[in-house]
Amino acid sequence: MFGFLKQYYPVFIEGTAQTILISIIGILIGILLGLVFVLMRQSKLKVLEYLARIYIAIVRGTPAMIQVMLIYYTLSKVISVPQIQFLGSGLDRVIPGSIALGINSGAYTAEIFRSGIISISRGQTEAGLSLGLSEKTTMFSIVLPQAVRNILPALGNEFISLVKESSVLFYIGVQEVTAQALGVGGTLYNFVPPLIVAAIIYFVLTFILSQLMQLAEKKMGKKYLQNN
Amino acid sequence: MTDSANIIEVNNLKKAYGNNVVLKDVSFTVKKSEKVVLIGPSGGGKSTLLRCLNRLEGDYSGEVRFENEDLMNAGKEKLYQLRQKMGMVFQQFNLFPHKTVLENITFAPIKLKLASSEAAKQQAEQLLEQVGLAEKAAAYPQSLSGGQQQRVAIARALAMNPEVMLFDEPTSALDPEMVGDVLTVMEQLAANGMTMIIVTHEMAFAQNVADKVLFMDQGQIADSGSAEHIFKSTTNPRTKEFLSKVM
Image 1: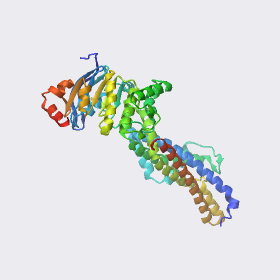
Image 2: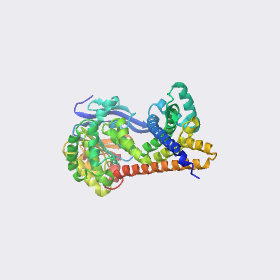
Image 3: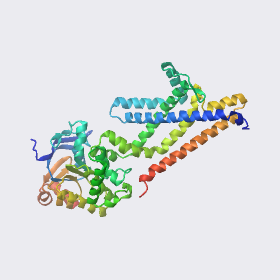
Image 4: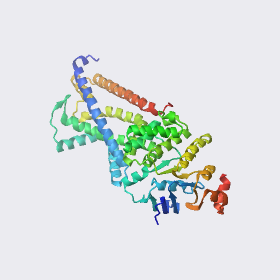
């Protein structure tokens, strides 16, 4: 059943590398945007707060596939990325694609960050301020480090769904794992075996990711949750 | 109106949450190295008043002056500087759980570039010695008892070399057997001449330490005077009623 792999395994490796690449970029942009938007959301300036609310509402309320396509078709008109091939796809597709993933993930990450910040008692902020620290220092050195520990499980979930969701970039022609599997399926006139291979690859990737997240949880928790 | 001997002046302070008026027209002064104790029934505005002093509560009307600087109209940077000189100790300790005891104490002085990390560490060790917790420097707050945490919190506030220490019911969240250790540390501070403003329900301590007692009820200073006056000879019926219930 999987005899085709002998011939087509480089295609899957390329696709996997592409999936990993777009996922990493997506996650990084997502974290960055999440941080920016949660700070806006918590801001005393109403304009910033509403901008953040609108961004979160739109991203959460529309399909990722449409977002990706809209961003791709818009970006490709505004800026011209040279059509350099990289891992089987043009950078003019990979770059807008991973940006779109990041923009999508950023909305969810912002809400996760917010849940973490809410989970830290107001007393922590007050303690920081009473020592003469600025709001910014208090947020970044006192509140966020504790919040991040509390939200690691939820963040892990978000990263895992981003890896799987990255398959939507197939619609704009990024040759990630799903696209490659469909391509192979097309030449074989049989889609099931290559799709199973793709599914296994996603499973392995997300499994490794979840293990990494657990490791991070343990490492951050050990410091102060256990007695001594 | 401003007297340079006063380190803190509160003039006609009013504060409301919506329609709920918590402070109605409060005025008092604190002199350098004076110990002012705020007593009174819960909900009387004691903690809110204390928290207005370093502007953890903003949006009040009236005036709070610290070292002759108007807190409400101070810019951000100025406010941060003023807060550095006003240590605060909270009912719930509010130690930073992700930092060791030593880091809790050294964090602000180092971050604010008031001391090198070496000097901050030395000072922290001295302060821990002072509050009787020298051996806990490397521990995380979660592993300490409430009384120990509160003493670390006092050390953390002292590490900023404050001019004034504000105590917001520092022993109210403690098991009874822990209260003594914390009060002892506070008594030492008082004896060393620290200016202190203390909200407390520990009447024996108040009587012992206070230069001035303010009895707060329904958002006002209903009665004030020396500890001797408030606890022995006041004629204010509300003060007497309150004291008869708690002593």
